[in-house]
Length: 290
Image 1 (cartoon, one colour):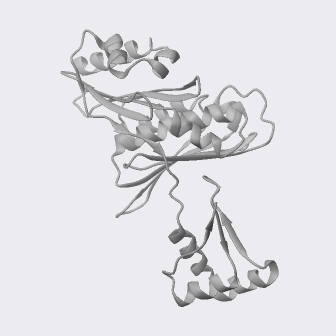
Image 2: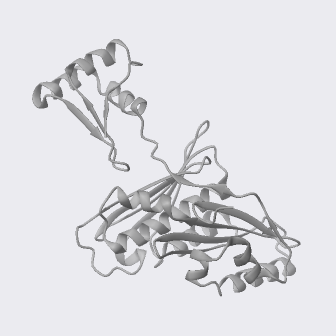
Image 3: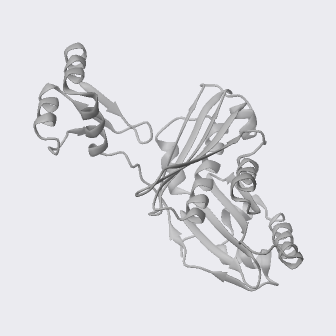
């Protein structure tokens, strides 16, 4: 079993505690290869990617889950997206120089953390929590406490260019004294987890190191990958919504229309003939330049 670009779920038997481990290497590197981000931004973006993968597995939504941090600091946006198929993508908007920002709070300043769930069928959901805490993990813990009312703990880190995450969540229960004691015990053991272990220790060995006195049930893991969800169809639909007259006006002024994906840098280019054929036959192929 792969130990990278993989998410692993588990439960502690006879205990109201479930958990997940995620570790991203190639998928994280492919996000970074698309842009030239400062080191502080790369670290926070890696944590965002790990977090969105963990949340997608917990929520089990049939659609897209996105995590956005918006603030007034040197970095105005961090965003990561995931879906149940294991596709990940992420982007940041920041100043060229962000300084020695060692935490999400230092990088983003005051702002909001926004969790958006867009199911394939159904109503769009959005949850918002302020960026009051120093780290993304603590902000997400606050979100779960406020909205889900389920005790949740996260450990997120980037070590040796590997983005990793560990999450514990209490299962719905009567919250008896025994349940709470089991939860606190699981959390206290997870607190001993070192960043290097989270990044490199094989999953089963990591869980044995933490919970060797417990009975752990490990589920089948799922692979993860960088895969941008931009598409020719999405661009065409966006152009059609603008109207033929508006598009022809842009063509007259600029000679062509270009749309570049901010996540993967794919460039979609259209000339006058392309626009004409788009409205004659919206399903016609559209040229794509990489």
